[in-house]
Image 1 (cartoon, rainbow, N blue to C red):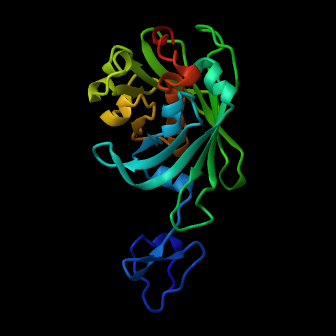
Image 2 (image 1 turned 180 degrees about the vertical axis):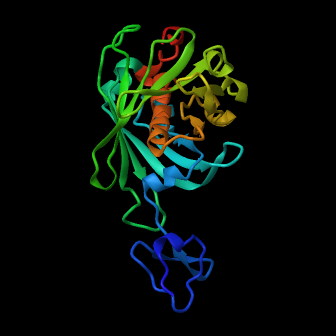
Image 3 (image 1 turned 135 degrees about the horizontal axis):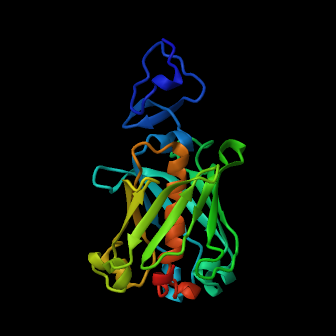
Length: 288
């Protein structure tokens, strides 16, 4: 029997007479040899209803008070919005020490590389998927608002997917998501009158959570985003390592999912980084 790649599922047993096709791998599990089908970034993202983004805790950053480059792990989510399974992506910031610790949040330039994670396939594991880039720009109220571009760089591609813009908002937090043809497709908004914004120095869950809504251009709520509590211990250490649970709109394309996932990172950089030169990020939230 000749098995095609689309027929293989994790956990399927290799039967006598089966012939492996390109892209299939043998993966040891539980003493048995099972078939394993590696998945690239677009395939993994397309099948997800949402993602859980977990910022890695940095003890050196907490101890020194100096902002270090952020690192994140991205998981699928379960029905409760909690992380599920192993990480499917990793994201790593690349920026200068001066930019992180001396410039205000709205001016800071950075790059973020989002890479694939696969426990078996050496070809896929660590391969770049998305590139996020924000240039240094002086922002003043409504003028020259921060913009982050998003590109698909998987398998050598250089495809512009769209951008995420931090708009000028009164008494709110948020981001606007634009597609590759500069059409705004989603608004992400949260009231600043929440415990996670006003009282975030306290380690209790209520003072660590922030709830966002995702709306389309007709004003319909189509998805959600939650900044979740990181736990009393990490909160009491004044860590800015954050967790986010993002539920995609039901009809979102894979490109829109990539843009929304990227928007979470811009929101974190803009509103929830507290150390070093970023200590004043949230002090001016009513005029963001």
